Amino acid sequence: MADITSSVGHEEQTSTGLPSTKLAMWLFLASECLLFGGLITAYILYRGASLVGPYPEDVFDIAYTSVSSFILVASSLTMVMAHNAALDKDYPRMRLWLTGTAMLGLAFVGGQVFEFTAFYREGLSITTNVFGTTFYVLTGFHGVHVTVGILMLLILVVMSWRGSLSDQPAFPVEMVGLYWHFVDIVWIVIFTLVYLIPTPQT
Amino acid sequence: MTMTGDQHTPDTPAAAPAHVEYHPSAREYVRVGLILVALTLIEVWLSYSDLAGTKLIAALLTATLIKFLMVVGYFMHLKFDSGRFSRMFALGAIGAFTLYVCVLLMFGVWGS
Image 1: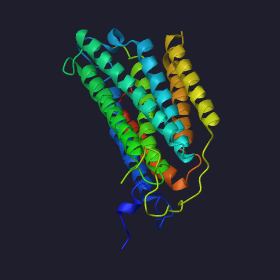
Image 2: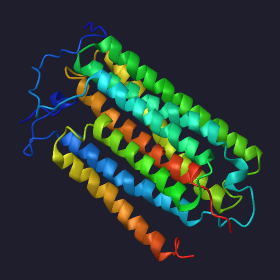
Image 3: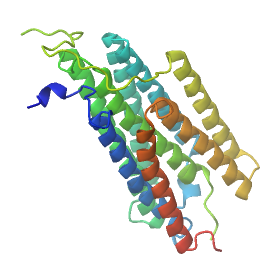
């Protein structure tokens, strides 16, 4: 009988010739497209349908949100650097890049918390109008995904530090990286559709 | 049992890699990252520019699509990885896009 525990973190051989873990991750990310697609559709569907303010143009600060976007793009770059370091078996450098990615993710989430607080002070809560509801649900779900990604990155760092990652740490780093880049591409879409495309006047 | 941070060598022998992949170099990744930053800058500039209506939306969506494909292709390695992964992800991404465009059309988002 195959030793299941010994294959954790390995690029195991399967009947497809591809690692099952990676196939499962891509399947999961494909299902996430449907989740975020639904939330983005709900936002677009109710664009300009709010009967009371504040409206998007009253609260959005494009310059501020742009900085958050740059931070997330930078975190994707540090993530691939971590993967490259793992492939080179340069584990101290891998941990450094992973920690850097987690810190950039934290900066993004911190920025989102600050933004939500500012919007709330301007009178936009989740129950104020349909804009508030669809906006907070969409960006909140994304923020939760980023937070989960940060936790996974920090777990990788701790596991690597303790020497319990596996003999091929590049594989788990790649899996977490896939999730992290997916979170980045979701934000790329949200940034354009929610923040940059102007709301139609009703 | 003592294990330092740089030890990744358990008792079991290392498994052979399931398939050989091409991995871009750090320099290539930085180049892709810089292109992504440039595209984001263009998007922000477009949103402040005089461009409006369909032209603005088309320009922004084009930049977004390029960024999306670059991250998926290079950072997520789909460009270099097995086609099965691409097909699996495309099933979800294109499926979701088609489904929700149909929903938006059904509710007449672009009708008026």
